Amino acid sequence: MPSASPIRVGLIGVGWGSAVQVPAFRLVPEFDVVALCARRPERVEAAGERLGIPDVSTDWESFVRRDDLDVISICSPVDMHHGQTLAALNARKHVLVEKPVGLDGTQTGEMLEAAEGAGVCHAVCFENRWEPSRARMCELVREGQLGQPYYAAARSGGDFWHPTRGLQSEWMYRRDRGGGYLMGMGSHDLDYLCTLFGEPQSVCADVRTSVPSRLREDGGLLEVDADDTSAVLLRMENGMLVTVTVTAIALAQSFRSIEIFGSTGSLGIGGALMGDETPVVRISSVGGSDPVDEIAAVREPRSGGEIPQRRAGAAIRSLALMLEDWLPAFSRQPSTAPTLFDGHRVQRIVDAARRSSDGAGWVSL
Image (tube, rainbow, N blue to C red; front, side):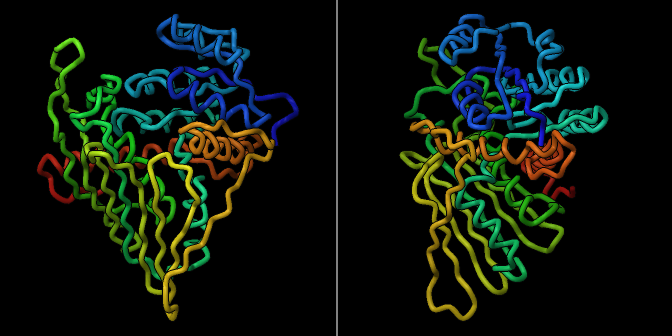
């Protein structure tokens, strides 16, 4: 494990970064978030005051080179990830990158290559792997519950972009800025299913923008070209078929589910997006009369720190557990934390899905 000295973290981006990342880091005593950086001085100063972190900056280029920072955590808008990550890696900093990792596979490939060349620790925030029900499903798959896996289906949806809802941050509606829900929400399911079942072989998809324009509060028109709804089919190298569907126009709905079927059993989980309900895994086995609902154990951060009681509480817990499991990497020991390799793999799938949707049919990976 790392030495007794805390690993000093500098965080870029104070939206999701201050709401989720800082509380998660604070649940893992080996890390210490000591400085914040954001483009707008009023936002970073307000975040610093709220979080008790007086060291704030608006100059990310000098921020990533600071000698008193060990890890740069990048939570800025997606179109800034590539430049900020490469600059941090050039300064030989360890990096944690929020997903989506980059705008396309060219960017994420360059980031992965730079990280491997720098010889530093790198991780990506696919913290949903640590949700209790997903963690238990992963254990059951690896214990052989499914036998030969045949098919997996992941579904997620909400009404974030339904015309009856107000606008989110405008960058999210622009593809050239990293917006869209296949990258923003579906990427978690793509990562999880590849973690369970290995590499995808080819992709076929329909990635679409159902609501191509929205009215701003001032009456102006916002043109939308990022996706709100996607259906992705993956042929896996192990012979499985995997489907991932995601939508942000499901009126009054909030759901996420995964079902997996194999030769000797099947597994299923479900619940609300960002929900913190009782984690249940539905298990069926050959010879069993009915499915069995198993309540998954909830792993808590070993620090014993209190999880904030708010909507993002489940995400904070999951990210804290991911950070705990990232720690061995700092001592050059094996770690189960997702890396830029995983982020690049997901981005390659997204790129292929977009090409397929544009008319390319099945796209080989």
